[in-house]
Length: 585
Image 1: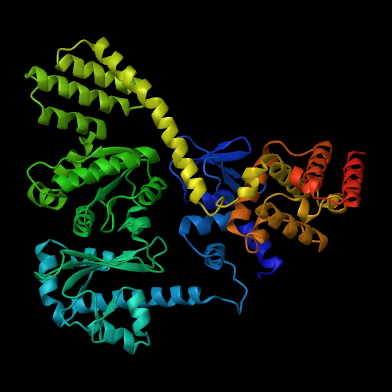
Image 2 (image 1 turned 180 degrees about the vertical axis):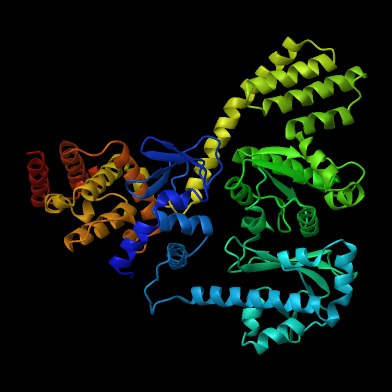
């Protein structure tokens, strides 16, 4: 267990406002700060930071806790890894612990192995065996500077070169396999996963190589081969080149399909290009993008798969609050080809004249339907109404409706009425859907899962939480509370967990604080404490209220069901009645 002096220094130097603001766009509202929650999709801010108590709480999904809890969740780290990350940023040393778990050592070795693999691939590219790969990159117009900036390398045709190199560095077959750098054949031989491929290291925001993407040079295997998820790499939560693009001075990020598209755009001066990692855009990636910009340009292929990916991305970005534009590239299959044909300046003009997602959808309708044909015109307008329903801004709606009414020689008021009717029908459905999404998150989240006791006795659970909050703010009232309330009185196992730890700390002369609690209680309990502190920040708890909560919990503990009372002996029944009478005095 970490000592109090270290935790106090960590809490002092890692102010929750400054830490959270690196990931979430938060705005001050009086003494609190609010923003869109990074842990679930929402359009209205319900994520709240309380600088006074150094805590956070989301009223939408129930996530809450301290600065360590936040880093654990946002970076997908174990407790000690989150502590180390914060300590490193604050410039303080973590006390040596003999209880460092195996997972931490595995992560360290895997990151170091990836670093060595990245260097090995780079040296292979620059060596004798990399001549053909260098020619390919030169043909694609890549300079030595851009190769160095991205750390591009080459996996040669030898099926054992990387594996043998890593083994010579002391790594085992299991370690190499777990890092997705090698596989074991049916005969028991370890061989390289990446063979005859241009290699793109995937680098996280802290500068560590967490995975690789390989583009084939020959005809064998898929065109692109990507690392599978490992202990240090989750493809759904990372983006290629975000470590570079996050520093761009442009106010938008360009989302591409592949590594080469990104590299080519950076080469042309567009240092705001990123790419997903062999998957369609995920909600986690959208939230990651939203921490750096509110604007995204989609640059996907125009084929059927690209169109589906574009539609999915627009939906996800809309939920995250990111404004989306869709890049249509004339006379070229991708940005790289366009820039080679027409130059970077023309691409800049293309970017400035990019359609919004709404304009893009409307243009697709014009490309699909013959508006001179009455039946197709009706289908056009029906599809157009469904596009308008998705727009929440009534001014934007009216502008688009007016424009289409003019172009199609249609009564604007009729179109407006149809849109309003469709909006009305969809509103109740969408509200129910959003509520269900939050409920689904809450039910499956480790922060709230399985708290059936609180669901069964909500008033008593609330009284328990108020008493815990009162103790938190009034540690001098420990004796007053503990003489009347024992852990058995407290409703909900997570509340009992908090009550036990807090009363123990106060009895030892230590003041309760979240940084100290987060290492000794469950994530659910620390989230519950964040909820309790959010109430304390808003209202506080008076002495008279606490007495009412104490009485409620005493009555709850002493109450019996009809069946229980019926099974009591005469003597026990008399004692039970005496207890009830005593508690009411």
